[in-house]
Amino acid sequence: MSNHLAIATVTSALRHLLLKGLQSAPWGFEYEVGVTFNSPEFARPQAMDSIDQLNLFLYQAVPNAAWRNEALPSQVKRGEQGFPPLALDLYYLLTVYTPNDDGLEAHRLLGRALSVLHDHTILSASELQAALPHSDVHEQVERIRLTPHVPSVEEMSKLWSMFQKPYRLSMAWQASVVLIDSTRPARAALPVLTRGTANTGITVQPDLTPVTPGLESLSFPHQQPGPRLGDVISITGHRLTDGPARVALTHSRWSGPQYFTPGPVSARSASFTLPADASAQASLPAGVYTLALALTRQPGESEYVTNALPFMLAPVLQSISPTQGSPNGDGILPLTATVSPQVRPDQRVSLIVGDREFKAEALAVQGSTLSFTLKGLTPGKYRLRLRVDGVDSLVVDRASTPPKFVGPELEVT
Image 1 (cartoon, rainbow, N blue to C red):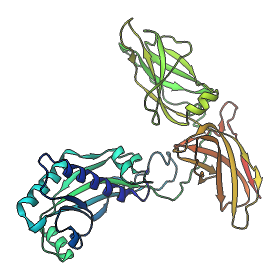
Image 2: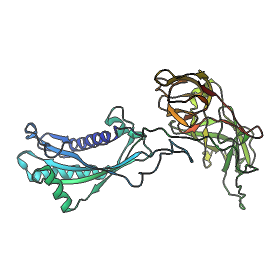
Image 3: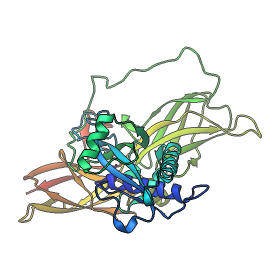
Image 4: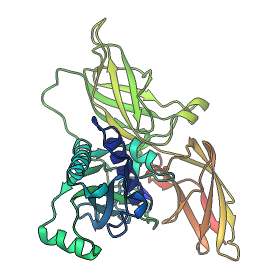
């Protein structure tokens, strides 16, 4: 995820990187050093004639072919209509300026700058986060890589002709890829109730039993796609009784795994009940998790951690207010929802009304009450789903035969 500040953030991060590298050069520079990012036509004002200067000019932004039509997995799920992000490759022109046009000093300055970029091939999340306030490009799924770009003599000649300035010692560099989220909401149809008469998938039975413990699959109550707090997760694997075991859960928003005590464990199966108390409501956010078993196979040995399997902890849309209402004169209908578990301010939250998605209003602190502004709804009854970090609340009751839709409904009059 990243907003419209992504390009400016990358430029600012590069400036900080180069300035830090120039100021920490082992033998230093004779003059004061500075990094600017203006067009070469205006890069050298008279006030800077007495310093060493490196100008970082963004001369081209090109759509990235690999990401151009690829919707982000955190925004849409299979079968939904989403809009891909704006994916860009940024091309920068590095130009050096020195007092009295000292050629040797210019070579030293360019050599140090290129050395810094050569040794720093990826902009880290911390560097991007510190570069510019209110930018979230540090959270995008793809890292931003820095690579040299070698323009042809003809291309370089055309560039400097546009600047209407004599050529100066320069080098081009590429930053790729920058992803800017689309602001258009996705459309999500209701899920399929059954797949075939038996509603079963393909099962595989291995012929050879592995020599180390491992997990094969996770299953959830009533064939739901994911559990909720308080549900039992059934674990299938092999050699699960090779030693005392504990469940290790990981989440992208945690700094490390959290450990829990499993239920009964046999050689081929185990179970784990997700806690649902007040502490779990606050500490186990909805989203994508991985589950592994940590076993102590021999006393005194370190724990053996099995392979990890993913699962989606579904949020619960507990209640809405109002359940029936009419839009105001501007076509707006405010709605408040109570949800479980608690939502964090940095989570991506939306409410799907029928097949339309509405973003939640920003939270100042973690909580279980969300506010939405619904606009443009025509009269009728709408099935509601809550989506938190790409995971939907469960709207199908598979315990009944045939399955049926459950959960809050909103009637617009």
